[in-house]
Amino acid sequence: MTAYEPDSRRSIADVLRKTAHGSVGLCVRWNIHPDAISYASVAAAAAAGVCFWQAGAASWLLIPAAGFCYLRLWCNMLDGMVALASGKASRRGEILNEIPDRVSDVAIFVGTAHSGLCHVLGGYWVAIFAVFVAYIGTFGQAMGTGRQFGGLMSKPWRMVALHVGAWMTLAAVWWNEGQIEFSGLTILDWTFLAIIIGSLQTIAVRLGRIVKNLNTESAAS
Image 1 (cartoon, rainbow, N blue to C red):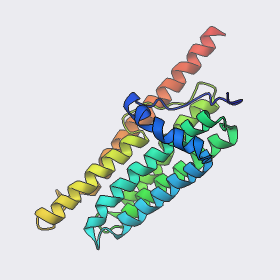
Image 2 (image 1 turned 90 degrees about the vertical axis):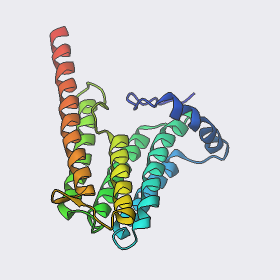
Image 3 (image 1 turned 60 degrees about the vertical axis):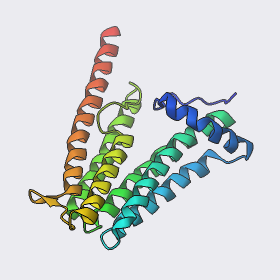
Image 4 (image 1 turned 180 degrees about the vertical axis):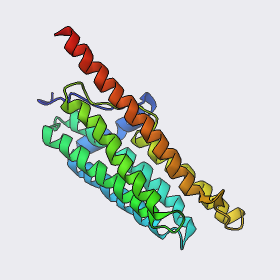
């Protein structure tokens, strides 16, 4: 039994948890440290960022780019599960779970920003919002109200939105004579706009829950 139990973990859908059990067992048997899995998530994000960056010259790279985004998510889920299963969960591990995650968000969206398939500033704005959304979540934990994971545009949904935008762009390049711009914005620009709007909703939801919890605690005391 692990001596340290994280007090705030993202809920994982049962279907994902079930598919991960085999991988968790292998990692524990092979003595793979959860920190190594956290670093692997950064490597996957970096690979995604490079693929997005070069996709303007080679559009087929949008296919593996999306795959690396999901590999990043898989590693993000797996590291915590392995840490608990192997008894290696620690406060240091929580730090390693957060910082690489933020680096990963920036690597992916900055890489996309420089793909030539969108406006550069759009990618940077999404990277900023991705970090800010996560900050609000951890802010709740720092305030003693618990880590907040709610909202429309949490990390998994940012990756799903980017995947959809990337593959719609690929379809337009291959089957729409390269026409990726609609109403003055490219498909990825529209994707960025959707992520930013969703991020604003997510920030509002998380802040609202933090304030509500603080008010409840104040009333109880």
